[in-house]
Structures are given as structure tokens and as C-alpha cells.
Image 1 (cartoon, helix red, strand yellow):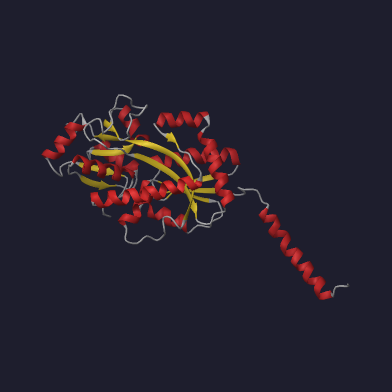
Image 2 (cartoon, rainbow, N blue to C red):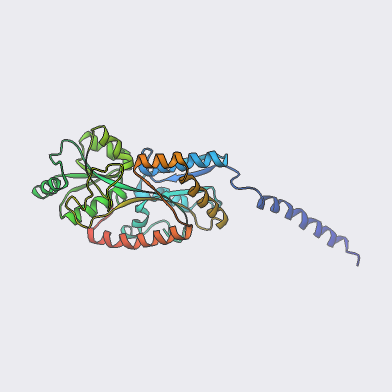
Length: 325
């Protein structure tokens, strides 16, 4: 049957319209620069791990991977920016335990921590160190607790922000040790540690990534690690549970997320590439130097972990009466 001129023109138009679509669909990923949003300033633990992964992705995918630091508001600024970004596989967010805590301390968030994000990869877990300025007259956890009990509210402890890893670790410590110390939040670990070294604050429970070098140089004194087992990085340092706070256990974790509805094939590709990166000898060596353990798990397993952490910290927030300051 002979087609009409109109039908022929429509067929030609449809074919022309489909050709660019097919070309786009077949475009290899990644085809342009990728950005990593980090909710903290340069120099902290989250920033450190973001840069380790970004450098390796840059090398393997031959595309720029740009780390963009957006500190402030307990991680909300960067997290909202990520939630509003196109779900095209070119924006990722690095989160810490604060991401799982924010729903419990804020009445309203400009995003949904679960529905607006796709879990991608677990990048690292790191012990925190209980560190003090050398001027503090306490050379053990027991002496620090005794000092805090003798002078309630006299000691100040720094954190990288309200409901961040360092704040939660310290809040759990003060609650379990039954001591009172004044919380001083900062916009990231770097400025907090700087003021701790300067003696503006006295105590901090900070990831070994950022405080460890200052302990080695003598600028800070470490009293304990927060994990259930001693850290290979500081094997002579007791755990908090050993040093007088039975049952205490805390690890900082770092997870990659993407905006919700990011194509599942891209999420899987990034997950597998990050897993490969974390097994590279030079990365394993870098992690060992930082006292960190490489993360693992599929996107589904990472999502289940985040859900369990959100439930866990809801109780801690309530018991410790953590509030936005």
C-alpha cells in the first residue's frame, strides 16, 4: 500500500527525533565533570575521604571530579543543594552520622533524608579520639571524669557542628560518664581542632583523621579511642570502655549519596568503582595511616544501614537532650 505524503513526512520526522535520543542514551558515563558536595570545610575527615575518592575517580574515568565544600547548618546547606541537584549521576553528597540525626533534632528539614536520596557507597569508618589540650590537668579518662564532676560546666568541648560526629560522640560520652561539659559547636573539624590546640576549648572527641597528627606532634593529648577494640594506629591507647565508661562504642562513618532517581545503573557503576578504589594498595596504605577502615556493601545494604542508624540516634538524641543551638 502506498503511503500518503503526510504519513511519509510524519515517519521521517519521528525518525529524526529518535536519532539524537538514541545517541544521548548511548553516551558513555561519565561524559562531563562530576562534583562531590561536602557539608564541612576543607581539612576535616569527610573532606579527606572525599578527596581520596575524587582523585582516584578522576584517574580512572578521565573526568574532573570536583570537591565542593559547603559547610554550615549541621550539614543542611550541602544536603539541600544535593537534593535539589539533577538526578543525572553528576552530583554526589558525602554524609556522616549527622545525616541520620538531623531528622530527630530539626522539626522541619528542606529535604527528606530517605526519600530524596539514593544510597551509593560506604566510603570509610573511623574511630574518634578523646583528646584534650595539654593544659588540661587530666592524663587519663578517669582523671578527666573526676575533673568534670568536681567542676560541672567548667570544661568546654568542641565539635564540628551541632549533631555532627564529634558532637554525638561527646554527648554520648557525657551522658554515659554522667558529667556536665559545655558544648561549643564550630563549622567543621578544622576550626574546632585549631581552637582546641589554641586552648580556647579543652576537650574534643574527634575522628583520628583530623586530630591524630596533632597528637603525634604533642599539640594535643589523647586519652582514649571510641571503638569497641583498640585502634592499630594507637595500640597503646585504651578504649573508652576500658578506661572507665563501660559499654561505650562509637565510630564515625562516611557514606556517599546521590539525588533520588539517579539512574540505578549509574549508582551501581559508582558503587563498584568506589569498592575497587578502596582495595587499591595506595588507598589501603593511606587508610591505615588515618586509622580508617574501608567501607563495603551494595547500595541496598548502605540504605539499610542508614535506616538503622537513623533509628539508633533518635533514641540517643532524646536521652541526651540534643538540641539545635
